[in-house]
Each structure stands twice: as C-alpha cells, then as structure tokens.
Image (cartoon, rainbow, N blue to C red):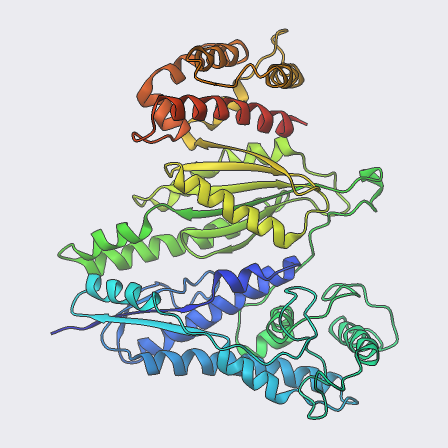
Length: 516
C-alpha cells in the first residue's frame, strides 16, 4: 500500500516576526525558502513530491511539504539541520575571515543555535488526508530547547544573547562579567562588521545598510542580515537580492518638509486552504489535483512578485497563498499618499484571481505612522488579517496605526470596498471632513449609544445614507448586512445593531484618514 508523508518545521511566523529592518524580513524569507527547498530536493531523490511544486524556484517556497512515499522524520531533521548548520558555518567563518584580529570564543554558541533553532513536525498515512491529519496531531505536541543566555539582550528581541567574539568565553559568567567594557567591545565589533559588509575601511563611518549603530543582534538575527549579502548567498546557492534599499520613513528629505513618511503594509493569506487541500486529496486523482494547485499558487507568487509596480513598493515574500508586501517610495521621490495606497489595494482581488483556484483571500492592510516600529507594524498586520478572516473571510481589514500606537480599523468584503469611492459631502464634493466632523459631534452627544433604544440603528443608517446616497438600504437588508458587516446568526438584535453602528463609524474614521 502506498504511503504518504507530510512534514513542516517551526517556528516560521516567529522567525519572521523578529524583524526590525526590511533586510530582516527578506533574510528570514530567503532562509525559510532555502530550508524548504533542501527538504524538497532530498525527498525527490527517493520519493515523489506532490507539493510544493517547482523545486527549482527557491523564492517563496512553502514550508509544508506533501510526499508520495516514505520520508522519515529522521531524514527530514537531518536534511533541515544540515542545511541550517551549513548556513551558520558560512556566516560565522565569513565574519572571522573578514575580522581576523579578534579572538573568538563563540563557536559553541553557534553550534547550540544549529542544534536548537528548529523543530520538525511529521505525519504519515495510507492516504494524503491521513498524512495531513497525522501532521496536525503532531503539531499539537511541541518541544523547545532554550539556548544559553547569561543576561545581555539582543536589541531586537530583548531576549536572545548578543552575538560578538566574547560570547561563550569560559571566564564569562553573570558574577564576574564586566558589562561596561563588553558594551564598548560590542559597539566596536558591530561598527567594524558593518564596514566589512559595506566594503569600507575599518575606521570609516558605516552608512547603516546592514546595521544601525545602536544595534546588537543575536546569532539568528545576524544570520538574517548576512544571507542578504550576495557573497554569502552564492556560497550557499541561495536566492540573492539583486538590488536592495531600506524603506525610507525619516524626515531628512527636502520634499518631506520636516515630516516623516507613512507607509502601507499588506499581509494576505488564502481562505480555508487546508479545507480545500483535503477536498482535493479525497478526489480520485487527488495527487494530480494537489500538484496542479501547488503549481498554480507557486506561479501566482512568482508573477505577483515580478509584476508588482516598483514605483509604489515591493513584495517581501509570496509563498503561494501567503504573502507580505510594503507600499512606499524611495527617498528622492514624492511620498506616496494613503489614497494612492488604497487605490492599489482595490486592485488586489483581480490580481489574486489570476491563479484561477477556488479559494478566497483575506488581507490585513496597515497604513502606519512615521515612527511606528516595524515589529509593531508586523503585529498589526497579523491582527488585521486575523480579523478579516474571523469576520467571514473574503475581506480586508484596513488599520490606520498612529505614532502613539493607537489605531482605527474597518473590515469590509472585497466586493464592497469601492464604497469609499462613493462618498459625497453636502456640496456633492469628496471632502471627508464634513462627515468626520458630524460623526464626532454625534458621538460626543452619545447619539449612537444604543442603551436599548431600537431606533438608534436606523438613525445611524439614515446618517450614513446622507453621505453615501442609497447605500444605506443595503444595511436594512438582513442577508446583505450580514455579508457586509460580518455578524453571525447567533448574534441577537442588540449585538447586530451595535455591529452595524460600529461598522459605519469605523468606515467613516478610516475613510477620513485615507483621504488625507
């Protein structure tokens, strides 16, 4: 009887999340794709890989692998860890070669990270469905080994130890280490390493392409940066960045008139892909259908990355049905506006449909203030995407995040997103200040507080109808309102009314900020 194997590894989201610079995101994506590709290539030597398709295309390689045949957990672990350890070895030896006048005590710490950074999950069965279900059961039981840390903290995560030549020294312990001296040593080391990466003299001032002057990275964080260096990528036969620049968000450019720049971030994921894969697996020709699906999504990710308009941003990764991108403009260009970012967002459903597969799309879109930390932006993206899914899927949650950390958000199905373009004020113009000010006055007077007043919902809809002529009627139709707002059939009248009022209020607040 034919055996099927399903395998994946972790942490994936956590590995991507620990990112401050755009280079971190790219590096994390390159590493994950590279590790997945090594698993696929090894499995292809003795079995048939059903998905992911196109093993020769490293970028955007999904990390969930389905195999027709037997591929043991021990094989998967050996393949993954060997590839990871080789990557660590190349990065470590490159540093030691470029900065040979240091005495390095850190080899053991690199070995520890080589052994304990990843966990393999593995499932097997007599059918594709059985293997996939066994994999999910395996993922419920997780093991993790902490890497030794004696007190100093990476400036990115705040937890992992800082990678520098003295890390792992036998005389170094919490009782006798001299942090003041080490702090200066670490600062000097990272400055010299930055110069080496930028091909500048050791005593020069680095431009900050790889490190900010105040950064102190852990070993995995350092590796993310180093694999974006073509020299190291070539040694590992990894995909490499042909050109690279960080997102400009600062106020230094003349065009910004002393103000920083807002940026747009979008994170998307196919809807109920796992369910769809199980349905395909149960077909008589399940192997073939799954291969076709994987091929279609891999092609879509490649085309999406290639065809994304470079004048408005870039795609960080597109692993089939899972993608992340940024909307921004280069330093010497005029800043992109929220309205321009929204205009692109409205075209995403048509781009998504080019894969011609029967799965929908949920997206979290974040328009972020000038000084919102990138780590926080990514968290907002994940939360926004999760909200889009939990509200009924096939939607987008737009979240406006201010420098204070506060935000406003609104969730809408893709087929009604153009409602924001139908706004007209009392002069038949598109000045959102009118409706925004009216809303503020009404909310200050508690006009939309339900307090068991059944007429409040209708009042809110009538108010909405003034600025969006005839659109309020859709909210009076139960089925249509359920689709647009995302409330469930279990919600009572009070909950539905509150959801309707909140949806109208959120639409106005988000629409006003997007118009400015």
